[in-house]
Amino acid sequence: MNLLPSFPLPNGYNTANQYLIDLVLGGANRLYKDTFTPEVTIRIKRELAIIRRQKMADYFLIYWDLARFAKENNILFDCSVGRAICGIVPYCLGITTINPIQAGFLSEHFLYGNEDKLQIFFSCQESRKEEVVNYLFSKFGEDYVSYMQTSSSDGKYHGLSTGQILITPQPLKKYFTLTEFKGKIVPEKEAKEINEAGFSIFYVDGKSQLDRFAKILASIPDQFDLTQIPLDNQDVLDELYHPSIKSTWYMRKRKEVYLPEIQEKTFDNLVVMYALMNQDDDTAIYTYIQCTNKRWKPIERHPLLAPFLQSTYGVWVYPEQTLEMLKNVCELRDTEAYQLYMYHYPTTEQIKSYEQKARENAEKKGLSEEDIEEIFRERWSHKWKAWKKDSYLECLNIYQDTWLKVHYPNEYANAINNL
Image 1 (cartoon, rainbow, N blue to C red):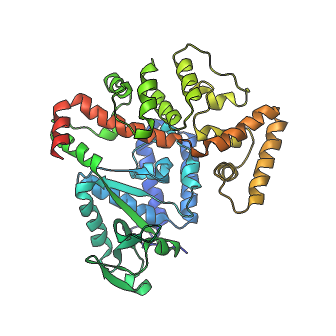
Image 2: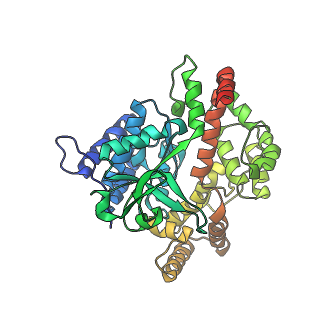
Image 3: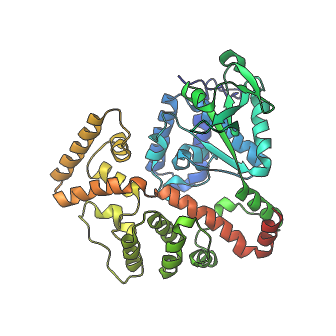
């Protein structure tokens, strides 16, 4: 059951699907222009089919409208958490700002993720989050919109989540017993129960980094879109590869040792290194450094596997590389490959059948037992490794921050001191 509110449609449209299709195609024509390749068309069709099947058109229209509201009111936002970042539909709608094809994101993340339903996580400036949430209340009415109650997994903490917004197709009181909690009228049930009952929760989170960006951008004469800055600025990259650049604590030691060793300081190499540093594999890191510095030749792979590892010199870096092999070499369908890799399955028997099919197809194509075992070994070893999308987004956030620091040092320092 999917209990979504209906998005108000403009004149001339009878269904949310019709309106969504027109918005997506309009965005695609604007964003891709001369690069409107068959891949763009295929991804759009696949994603729209999933959205239609799950009856989620209104859900995407609501987030499209939220993004439109933020843009018109100069509120910085992003949707870099969750599966939406890999979708071409959110990109064409302006909900996300990263071209998923150019960035190398697989549509499987968007289409076949953990949840039964597609989900979008909307982050905006922390200082203006209330404006965004209030827009939802005014758009649909207070009788239809509420905050949510949440509790910790151990039941010790019980609180009000202002980042999870419930919007119902009929007045809230039709579905729930309402209660006052911390000054807000909310359903007695908690967010998890409500979501499991088929209602869609809209996620609106505040992000202090976006406040810092907004403060810097407001203090400089230049007007530009931070999401469209080039990723090949050498001054920024030199700063990023410097051992003093901040990063998450668990990769700091490796970063300080390994990043300065890279001679070709590019954004792509940075993404690879962050992915490898997340994997606790010093051998792979050292091998990649030697290959990218041209001290070693790329690792030789079976001709059928080599194309998927060519960009990383034969080093197995991303789970996406294994997924592509399962699809294109082992001839699994997209859903089969994703379920086999992520071990998302209706039954264990089905997973076993997918693996048997993959092994048989690979053997028919001439792969040795050693090559086949390596694919499945990497399938398991990558379970906890960084997907390319995660490493890319981590690097992009740091790159944008560093761009402002390098080009506008005084404004950057003032923003840091005055936040």
